[in-house]
Length: 318
Image (cartoon, rainbow, N blue to C red; front, side, top):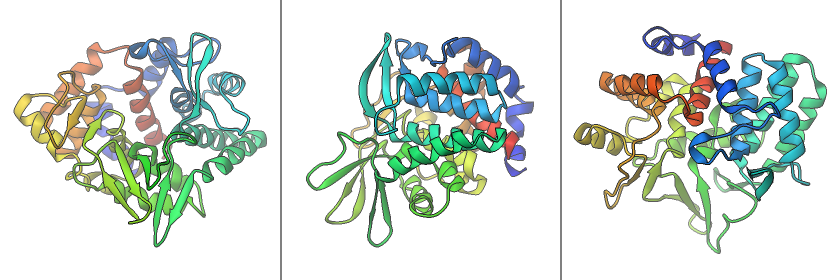
C-alpha cells in the first residue's frame, strides 16, 4: 500500500495504466515465438529482456504470455548448467556467457508464477537456477557479499569485478536464508556509495569495494530497484547520484554516460524513464516534465517500458 501511495503521480499526473502499457509492450517487443527484442540495440534478444518480461507477465497475470516466453527462453538460451546465455542475435546464441541479474529475474519470475498458478514444476526450475547463482556469490569476512556478474570474465588476480545493478533488493527480499539475506544488506551498502559507478571492484586482499569512474544507464537501474523495494531506502539515495543532478541543473539533461573524475559525458541523454526517478528523488518538477515528454514521444524504448511496468505492477501486487 505504501508503494501505491508513492506511485500516485505515475497514475494520476501522467495517466499511466499498467494494462495499456503491457499491451503496448507486447505489441512492440514480444514476438509470437516468445523472444523479446530491443529496437534501439539492433533488435537483439537478451536474457535480461526475457527475465524482465517473464516477471512482468506473471505480475500482470498474463499466463499465456508467460508460458510462451518461458518456453522460448528455456529452449533457446538455457545452458547445460541451468543458467542462460545472455545474448541471442539473428537466430543464434551470440555469447554463451550468462548474466547473473537476468538469471535472478528468470528465477524470481518462475517462483512468482509457481506460487500464483500452482505450478510446482516452475518452482523446481527456479530453485535449480538459484542453486547455480549461489555458486556466483562469494562471501568475505566479516560481512561482504560479492555477486559475480557472470561465470566468465570477472575474476582477476586480486580484484573481482562487480556490476552494482546486478544487486536486486526486491528479489533478495523474496528469498530467504544464505546468501540472500546477506546480499540484501550488501545491496544498500553499495547503493549508498556517493558518486556510485556502474562497475565496482572488490579487492580480495583488502576486502573492500572500490568504485570506478563511470556511471551509465545500466548502473542507474539501482534507482528503479530501490524505488520498487523500499520507499524510505530510495529517498536515502540523494547523495548517490548528486553529481548527475548537479549536471542536469547546469546543462538541462542527464547524460547517458558520465565520468565522475574527468567530467567527460555523452551528449545523449539517459532513457526517458530515469527522469521520473530523478524527479522523485530530488523533488524536481522539471525532471518530471522531461519524463512526460519522453513518454509521449518515445514508443520504442524497450528498456524504459520494461522498467516502468516492473515498477507499476509491483506496486499493484504489493
